[in-house]
Length: 100
Image 1 (cartoon, rainbow, N blue to C red):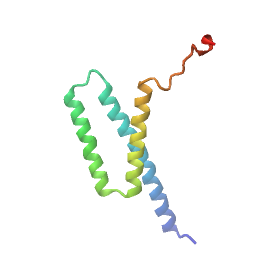
Image 2 (image 1 turned 135 degrees about the vertical axis):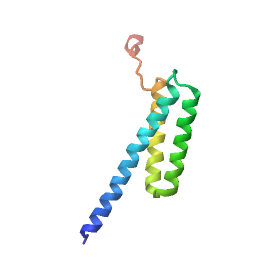
Image 3 (image 1 turned 90 degrees about the vertical axis):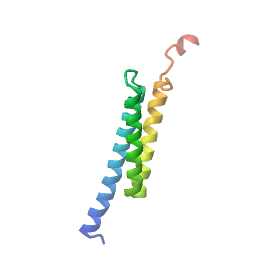
């Protein structure tokens, strides 16, 4: 039987994974936005990239393996999704009915 401490421990693990997921999504979105805005200077882009690398290094040192995996997965999915969206992969061809 689970005690109260066990339930709180499992909830803490779950909340840590959810938090790292959302933080990875936000970091991926911020990185993408910083690199794709044309009015950004290269110095701001370099600082954003170095900040992302610094945070990733800190996470790799102090977080658990599950948290690292969720953070990296959500960052990669966010960057991949935003990259494909900007290339027009998700846009449907509305003229396909006219071609047939």
